[in-house]
Image (cartoon, rainbow, N blue to C red; front, side):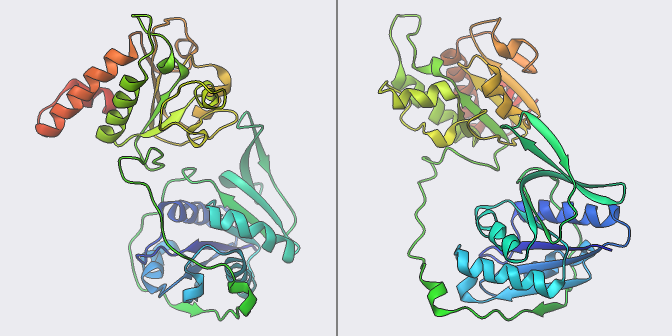
Length: 361
């Protein structure tokens, strides 16, 4: 009989994040798949965790634990680790599921070591096979998928955001069991000063966006008139990101140009890179522009459900079964028209237009 512990941080507004609810969904499914398994929830909060516990009271958990206090409000290894360790010990859990956030990815491997357990990060699926918990994980930059089983307990599983459907159930009243955690004075040496975030028009990475827009190196090349048009590329892409609230990705070729001293898009950084040596986003839709669709880049699109591309080359990699739709056209002209249509849609929100069809079809 396995005891499953769902671990999550409570957000500043007293709710659970989407990544946390996705992990809860995986934990609930695993409990149902394992004979005799039980589920517990462990919440870490700066203030009161009651609202968050009530939000998930219908998940089937038998016990709800909480660690609360102002010292748990910020990401700090010492306090996050202390809270997680006490929750695991108090619940007696053999399987611990947590969202693969920066905070949990940083501290849970250390807790696994303290408790003589094992940990697997970047988990993409959780199920039961032959009565044993089985997790799916990608290796070699998402080129090889493996299914893992372990006998060691406790086993910590960090689920990648976007790998499961968020749990949605009726709210009710949960009986919280507060857990006291003693924090030594030298564990509070890391302190919080202030939040610094870019302006909304500077934000280009939006994990929750419906659309991923990828810019390839072709945006920086000479165009039909024999000259590059970086200023126009900057304007077109930023305007589209703002109007469509899309997330920006880049090919390795585009990102590497900045390191070679060549002119690039002013807002493109290595953080935007998608592909074998970059990120693997999980947006429902993706639009690639001025990008050839080579395998090292396309491997980063593995979890994009609907793929479209704009390229002047009808024989590019996207046209060889890697995209659902390929527009053989000039990306500058297409994006100019698309931005115009999106602007018209904003002015006339009830009117149907081709831009909406292209983004939502």
